[in-house]
Image (cartoon, rainbow, N blue to C red; front, side, top):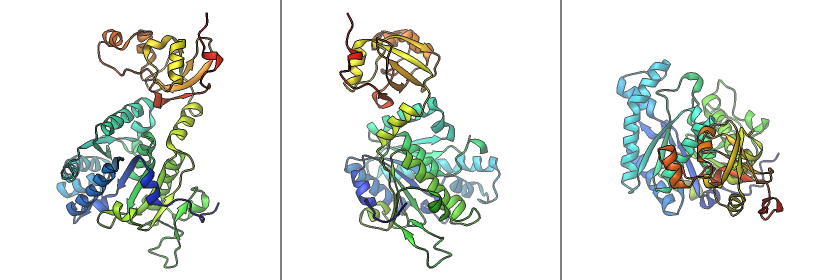
Length: 390
C-alpha cells in the first residue's frame, strides 16, 4: 500500500460533496474556559458559505463537559462519571446557545441533537435519528450534534466525538467528514516529539502501518488523539465517505482548507450510496419478508418507495428498522430494505392507502413501508419475474 500518487485533495472533495459533517474539538471552541465566540463566528461564516453552495452541513461538537466544569467549579481531569454527566448537563445549555447565536448571525437555524452509541448502532434508533437528521437538512437547518453524556453510562459511550462524527457521516450517507483538530494532519510519528516526523498527505487505507503512526496508548499523539481519528477514518471509508483531517486553529478554518491549507485526506474508494446499498444487501440478515403485488414491483423498479397499498402479505416477526426481504408475486426475492414499521403494525396496513393507514393506526405515521433510500433491488428492471400474471 502506497501513500504517494495522491489522486484527490481536500478542497476537491469538499467542492464535490453534497453532505458534509464537520467535527470540532473542545480545545478549538474554548478560550480561557469560555466559548471562543470570535472563532465560532468565523466558522459559522464558513458553514454559511458551504450552505450557499448548495451543500448540507452537520456539525458534531465537543465542549459541553468543559463548559460545565467551569460553571460548576469542577476539575476537568478529576471527574467521576456522575460529575461528568452533571457537567455535560450544565455546559450543554451554553454550548447550544453559542451555536445558535453564531449561526443566527448567518440567518441559519441551529437544531440540537444529543446521541449515544446505541442511537447509531441499534437499527430502530438509527432509523429514527437518520430520519430526524434528514428532515432537518431538508428544511435548511444545521444539526448540532454532541454525545449525550448526561444519560450514557461508561459502557454505552463513544468517549470521543471523532468516532461519533464518523458514525453520523455514515448514517446520513455524507460525502465528506472534516475533522478540525489541534494538528494539521497525519505524521509518521508524533511531530511534537520528533522533529523529523514526515507528513502524510493521502491515506488510501488505514492498515497496520498507518495505525502504528498513531503512537502508543500512553502518548498524547496516541490514545484519545490520533488513534481515535484513525478509527474514525476507518468508519468513514467503509461508508464510502472521504475524511479530511486538518487544523482548526486558523480563523475560518474551512475557508483556509479550501484555499490550500495542509491536511491529510483519507480517501474512500466507494461512494456513500453504494456502500449503504452493499450493507443492506449483504451485511444484514432479513428478519422477515414483505410480499408485493405487481404494481408495487414496477414502482420500486422505477425508483419509488414501497407503500402499504402495494403489500399483499408478510412473513416473520420484525421490528422497525429491521431488514426485510422484498418478494415478487411469484415468491422470488427482488430486493431487501429496512422496514419503517414493525410486523405487528405492518400486518394491519396491508393494502391500505395513506388515508386509510392513518385511520387504522390512529396516528400519522410515515407514508412509506420501505423508503427508496433504505432498499436495494437485486433483480434488474423489466425482469420477467415482475410481470403481471393472468
